[in-house]
Length: 65
Image (tube, rainbow, N blue to C red):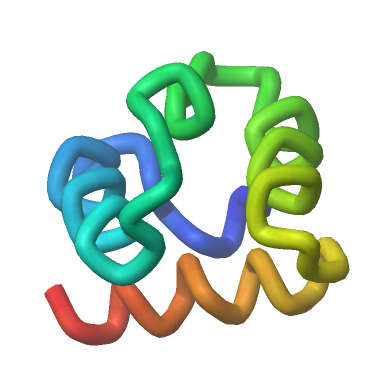
């Protein structure tokens, strides 16, 4: 997940993900440095997607910023 470069833009990314997936909460999208895998796990559970699919969704949002 390090290659996603989410640290500096996380608030923007979080907002875009919430727009795209309306059922995501702030708790689902809580990013804590060093706990990226925990974030991915929460998103996997909420979205019912594989880890790679979640990463692709985040990359898609980053690309659109």
